[in-house]
Length: 345
Picture (cartoon, rainbow, N blue to C red):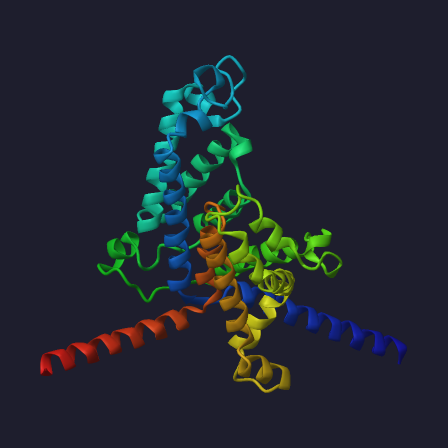
């Protein structure tokens, strides 16, 4: 009897293991249309192109990436090259310009979806080489975007809304199904970014002990703000900055719940009080809307460069492609109805 019980227990464990493995494989093999990933593929290079053109406008290409003995802050020509690009072609201001041009061209190519995977790999290479040449100019948002480029390079981000789709299907929009896991990894990037940013806010000015004064203190520093407003005008808004500080901490730390919110939304037809409450209260929309407001406020008030836009470029991954299709259908119907009314008039 004891041997039979052991066999039954082993059989149950084996069955549960097989089911768990099957569920794991099924999760990573999910398919969907490619609109969400395509929008990320379009917006990430757009942010990079804007950032690179801003560097060009300010005349900082050579100062940032040329060797020191040619007027830059990069490695000297006599030093061992710190980048593969320089080891191949040599360290010079001219080659810094070629590397800049390669990054700009590959970003444009990725944005329009022309040989998307190859373009993503070339952009990843060029962008990382620029980081090696001037590590002090490399920012957190650059690391974030390079991580996303790795995902794009190994995904089917060019399946729709791209030159690749037109070459394959003779139309810009395709119904081709793509693997969902690249979109999940982009969402994971956002979760890690926000949650750990929130957890690292341990200074007293982010807490009750200093009156949640962090955002106010930032607005007091002229080198951070875009517009210097009279103190008499801003001072009455101090309680709003306190509320914004507390809200920022709560919102960032709550990012750890984002996968749960997305799952409860995707399974909203199932029963359950928690699922019904989350979807009825639209907590996912509240979280996403707060993030959009947060980044647009940063872009408006503070001189943070590409950071707000780089984060927002990943937000299309939060929406299921069915959502984008539904919005596009509604917009098309509204446009058709307006055109019909115009003709009738």
